[in-house]
Image (cartoon, rainbow, N blue to C red; front, side, top):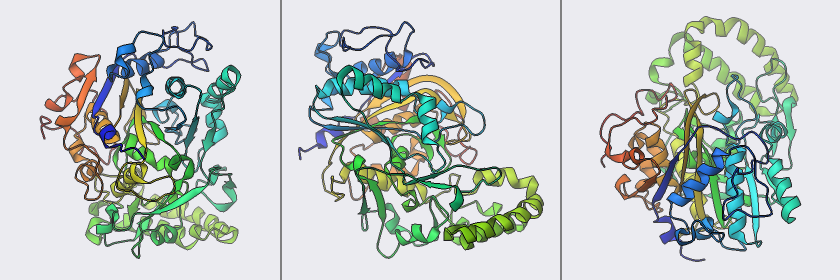
Length: 509
């Protein structure tokens, strides 16, 4: 394995600011036959601003700069070697915006993926693999997502033009679809999926996990069976179930969405690594209870009186019935849930909206989810193809953040669209995430996972402070973001983070 430390020490980050618009016609061809563009591929008669922006960001990074403007310009040739396995990991969390908003304020737009695919293919020179893979949320209808994104049009283009297959993989083992008024992931709603065709591996970070310093293990994961989550994060174990498709990557290209997040502040590269996990119930989302009881589910002032009753009843129903994963207990839950909704929930109607927003660790006091994010960053860089943690980086990562349309407010699942026209790109995920958070108007120093990774006791993430990041932008005002108190694009944080994440003073380390 080549020593990749120098690669990660490259803290150059490009910020390309263009128009906030996506092309509508699949397979999202560029509107200009650029000198380096493959002559076997078509162009569009409609302007493709996303392709322009990704290309512009690569130019700003200085990739293969001596050949820019020629047919031989190969920007990702500095990242990808012929014969590599390149895994492109978008953010495909949902197939619909359940509040009726813009789906592309939630998920990566396929036009950004198309540009990344083109330059990856050029760098491979016909030798190697490109795979598009993600693990969406359990209620994502992947077929609907493929239909709404027209992602398979890119796959078909490469099949017809080059006889080159680009698998698009849903890494989940199951999904569920809401039926009528049944808004829970009951057993009867669940449908099995093939999962990762390459399989999964369990990785134990025991001794080098951010959870090793915690004492309360009353955890809640992604599903109702809390016993499963706790069993993987107790007794000296800190386990994660990783996709072997992801672990097989020589180069992992992250293409996340620029949006806020209810549990960890922002969704960028680091939080996006949740999509590398094939069993998300291994992921600790929060700890039951309030801070005074050793938990981080809700602020202390929330869990009193009527609120304590409603949360307690809901927890009992989930733990005693839904977590058992049987049709009998599911039916009992459904019978009990009707009077719960009709008689118990109305008791706290005046505070119900706020509880829904904050419950489940959806606030700045969540002391669990950031640890999960930190652990996933360790694994993504330092786990080898066999799932064994090593002392040196095991693969290259690269980032292209889709911020052409971002998401603010009630993110990551129900955000309001924010049209900003940004593509942010770079070699070091932590450095790129710090830039992304700052452009959103947030103080990266208030993100616990950023601080943990910068000062990590076990692994080097190569970013000592923001002054080490070398910013390049096509807009002069975006080149000095860490030395001002400008709010820049001033995203609205999730309500649980409002007043706790925004920039307050000049960004000097």
